[in-house]
Length: 404
Image 1: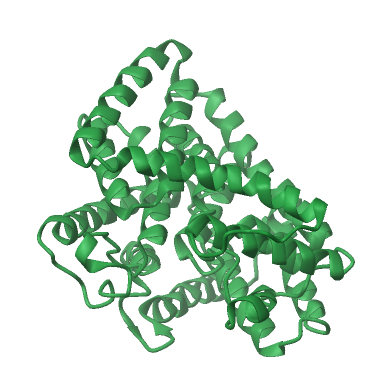
Image 2: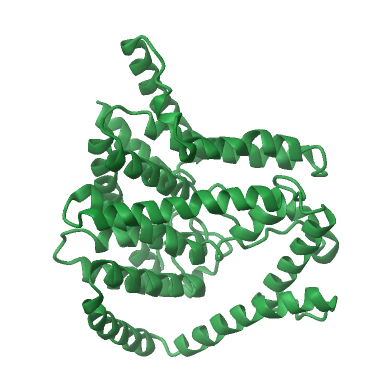
């Protein structure tokens, strides 16, 4: 019974936006069931187990709740702040509900199995969307159905590509004989999402996998990379344009910094890169004007009203945190995030053969890939698979360092 609820819980994290009744996701209902399991354990043990909060990496995220409430005093919109705080709190509920369970090692292995099973639901649907002009009702959004950009459960191709890259390392570290075929299929799907930054994230993930496993295997990476490039090049000729646009986007980031330092605002606002540059510029200006305290939780969209005529997301998760929460909170978050990456990497290096250690390696690479992938969606604060990855990272650390 418990395992069934946990599987449904993981499934709801991936399909939550699709199965919903207005703002109420099926995930929210299943989340209540997960909390119910915890309450049953509390009743059974006749005590609340707070021991798992005695480590700094478990308690640090909780700082976000009072700080975000505090920023509401100057955010300019208490509604935006409370909405953002609700998203953040639900993310924390995922983390702490998954970490409260008694059988962490078994749960960690099961959660990864569930993610792989869910991938077998996602990929067929994505191919139907690409090649058969099929669309789930939620996928039929303004994101160019006629261009065959798959979205599956996320309604946005950038979000979908980011989620695929979060899953990819778990396939690479598995014992599946067809993992490279699956990896190639994921590459094709990401390509069709037209998410340029996620193609870069994909290549980084593949490279890191070979470096983690064995540096001598880098020749295989080069071979597979060249093979993949040829497939993409022959699949659609515009691949060359995609690479050019990616380079333009990165150059645009540098240009934005220069524009800010020189106080020049002569940016091209009508192309994708230009829009992102202006979003970045207005965000940095807002941060400086707030004395580096941040413009307030959820308030960054308000910075763009004068320029865009409407609210606009930052389209950069890391800049969103910096601009909204301020420099101090951003530093704390980066320290926490970096710890999850390096600690899981160290745990993987201890024993590369144990399943839980290999999962630690996959988590580490997944979080590194997400650094680039998170630049693609408009925002990831309510991207539930991201919070799932944080949960797995913390469970992995506890499983490998604490005797149950």
